[in-house]
Length: 397
Image 1: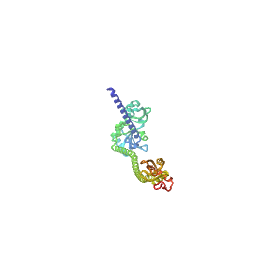
Image 2: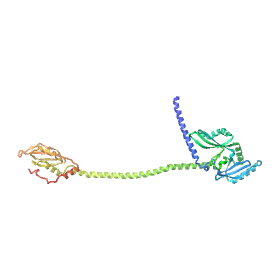
Image 3: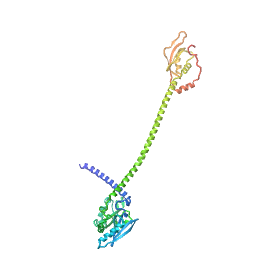
Image 4: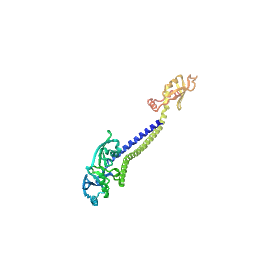
């Protein structure tokens, strides 16, 4: 039983590890893309120029605005320990002149503790809880006594380490300042170091995530719109080449169909030409397949000896039949075999000897040789034209 469960667990471990790797990849991809978003488009913290920044000093509150990469004073409210209502009225009057809808609390550099620390790369996915645990060892504060934020400075995969800049400030004083502003009707959801508001495009926000400003519905719609535009552009990037290839394939298919029709027309024409040529050649081949009758008569006349007379010469479909008389019939077969136009000579009936003139009567047949048209034409061109003699035909002996 135990042996059967081990492979199952190991397979689950492998699949879990693979899914964890996929999750890490997509989180890394998200972080890399997030780093490319301009600061003005980030939901929170918003660009420093969107806020009116309040900084508490020993004798009052200085209000500043961020313009052109610099902080400019918008006014100062002198705080009176005895008249809190006058402090509130003076602050609200100065706040109304700035025409800034949001208020942020800026912390001077002497109240900020910065420290760069090295942590194992494995804590990258849970970096904030790990830093909260490290506060007691790395700073004079613990997690309940300080507000902090961090900035990743370097990631060293080969060394298995991540370098983080830790920004820390005393929580008790910040809570007192936030409580005063909230009591005056201006709660702050951004607490940032003053020296970062003019230089850093993405300043640190010391408030914990649960106390920070929430994303508004308009911001959600804006990001949803940007996501839809990105998806649409991605779809267009993928679809346009496919559409172009589809259009090219349609054009090529049309050309291929046209060429196929032309090729079919050429094949039909070749077939018709071959058929017409075959029909035309059939008569010529049939004509030249066998020698002309005149040539056969000339051949027989040339082969027969002078002591032979024919009473008839009949040319049939594929043979020549000779009837006549001769002094010696035994040599006729041998003479006929030497012909180039006839073959397989043989007597059709026994040879009969005539008592009156002591001549042998015979009936001999021979098959006509079949030749090609070219051979027949060549033979006709080579055969000299001579007048036919009647010396060996019937009626002349």
